[in-house]
Length: 274
Image (cartoon, rainbow, N blue to C red):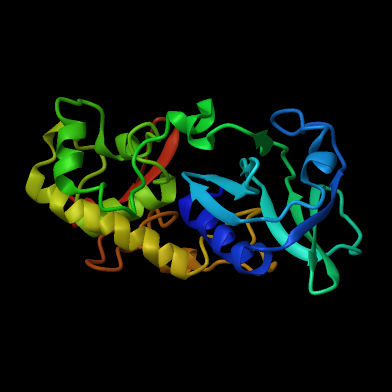
C-alpha cells in the first residue's frame, strides 16, 4: 500500500509539471472506485487552472481555487504523467487532461484493486470527514518527543501498532514503523505508555530520518507502486529489518525476528531493540 513517502514522491513528481496548467478534459473509464466518481468533473474542471498540489496524510489535494480534487491511491494505485494519446491499459481508470506548452498531457490513475478514491470538495478540504480525523504530520515541528510522550501516556497497546494509528500520527505505515523502531533501538512490543521521554527523543528523529530517506529514494516499490514518471522507488534496498525475517541484522548479525501485531508483520532485532 502506498504510504506517506510514496504519496509525497507522487506529489513532488506531478506538482512541477502541472501547477499553473489548465484542465482540458476528464476521462472516466469506470463509474466508481472506492466511491462513485463525480459525474460533473468534466464541466466543473474544464478550463480551470491548477493552483497547487498538496498532501495530507496519504491523500493528495489538487487545488483549483473553486474546489479541491481529493485523490487517494488505495492499496495498489499510482498516478503517472503520460501523453494524452497513449492507449489506456486495463486498470487505467481515470485521466485528468492538461494543456502544457501546446501539448495535451494526462494525469492517469492506475488502480488494479479499485480501492482508491477521487472526490470533488468545494468546502474546506481539511474539514472533510476523511481528513478531519487525521493526526499530526510526522515531518512537521509539531511532531516532537514531548508531544508524543503526552499522546502515549497511559497506553498499554504496543508501540509499533500505536505509531501506525493515523488518528494520532499520519503516514507511519507498516514498513516505516518497523524501520524507525530499529533505528531508535526500541522493541516493537513495548507498551506505548512505557516508552520513556529519553527513548522518544531517539524515536522521533528516527521516524523523520526514515521517512526522509524513503522520500529521497523515491519510496518503496512493492507490488503495484510506481512513481509519476513510471520509474520505481528503491528504498526497499535500504531496509534494516522489514521483510528480512531470519536474515542477519545489518548491525549485529543476530537473526531478524518476525511476528504478527494487529494482523501485520513486524520485523525487529531482539539484540539491537530493547
